[in-house]
Image (cartoon, rainbow, N blue to C red; front, side):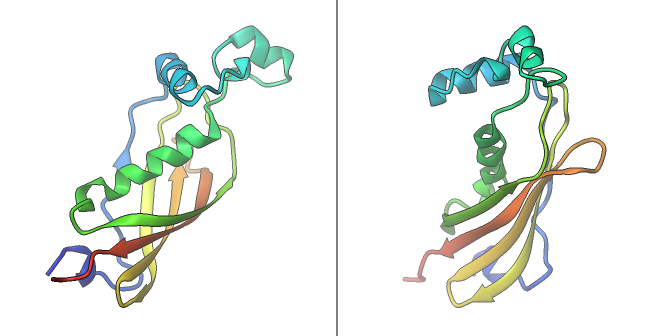
Length: 136
C-alpha cells in the first residue's frame, strides 16, 4: 500500500524549508520561464515600480510547492492546482512549504497547501489535487 493512500483528513506531509531566495534563483527562473520582467531581477527597476526591492516570480513560488510531492512521484501525480497569491516574496526570504489533507476520495487526495515566509506570513495558499495511480 502506498504512503499517501494511508493519509486521512488533517494529516500533513513533511514540510520543506527552502534555502533563502537568491538573485540567482530568480535570474535562472526568468530565463527558463521567459519572464524577464525586471522587477524580478533588477533592484532599480523594482524600486522604480514602487517596490522595496526585487520580488520573486509568483509562478516560481507556486512551482516550488510541487517539491512537497516529489517523494510520492511513484504513487501518483498532481492533477490540479488552485492557488491564490497572498503576499510578495523578497530576496533572502526563507519559505516553508506545507500541505495538509483536506479531503480523500478513492484515488484522489485534496491538499490545502501554502508557503509561509520567515515571519509566519502566508505568501501563497491554495489546494492541490493529487491523483493516485490505480493498483494493478
